[in-house]
Length: 312
Image (cartoon, rainbow, N blue to C red; front, top):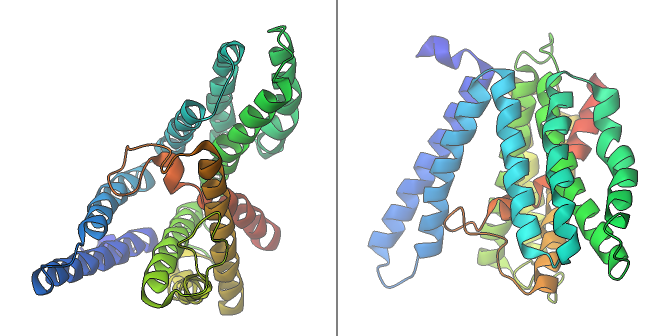
C-alpha cells in the first residue's frame, strides 16, 4: 500500500477518494440530523462523483493510449449530446459524419504527439473544409447558422477537450515526477473543485447575482469563494502533481476558477437559448457529459498552453 502511494498520481487519487468519502459521511449525517430537509440533489451529486472518479481513475492509471481513448470517448459523447439539442436543417445531417470523423483524427494526433497538426487541424483545416461540405448540400438558407453552430460545437467538444488528453504527452521531469498524468489530475481536481466550491459558497452566502438573466444561481459570493478555494487547492496539490512554484500555483488556481466560471455561464446561455435545463441525462444529478465539461472546455486549452509556455 505504501509503495502504491509513493506514486504522486496514486497519492492524488487517494486524497480525492478520501475527500469524497468524507463528503459522503457528512451528507449522510445531514440527512439523519435534518430529515425534513431535501438533500436529494446533493446525494445524487455525491453518488455520481463516485462513479465518475472510478471511471476517471481507471483511465488515468492505465496506459497513455487508454487515457487518450477515454478522452476521445468523452468528446464523442459530448458532441453527440450537442448535435441532439441544437436546431439543425435536414441537409446538415449529411455533414455530421465528417464532424464525427474529426474525433479519431484529432486524438490520433494526440496519441502520436503531433503537436503541429494537433493545434491546427480543427481550427484551420476543418474550419475551411466543413463549410464547403455544407455548400455541397445546395441549401443556402440557414447556411451561416448551421456552419457556425457545428464549428463552435467541434471547438468546444473536440478541440478544447483534446487539450486535456494532450497534457498526457508532457514527460516527467525532475520538477514534476507525476508528468502529464499529474497535470491532468491537477486540472480536473481544480476544475471540478471550483464548480463544487462556487455551488457551496453560493448556497451559503450568495446574495448578489452576477448574470441573473443567464444563470440566476451564480452570485459574487459564490464566485469569489470559488476562486479563493480553488487557489487553496492549487497550493495543496501543486507540490506532488506539478512542477509549479507556490506563486505560479496560486495564479493557475485563480485562472482556472475564472475560466471555469466563464465556461459555465457560456453553456448556460446556450441552454437558455435552446430552452433546455440540461444537455443530457447520462449522469444522475449532473445532467449529461456536456453539462460536466462546460467549464473544462475553456479551462483545458488555457491550462495546457500556460504550462507548455512556462515549463515545457
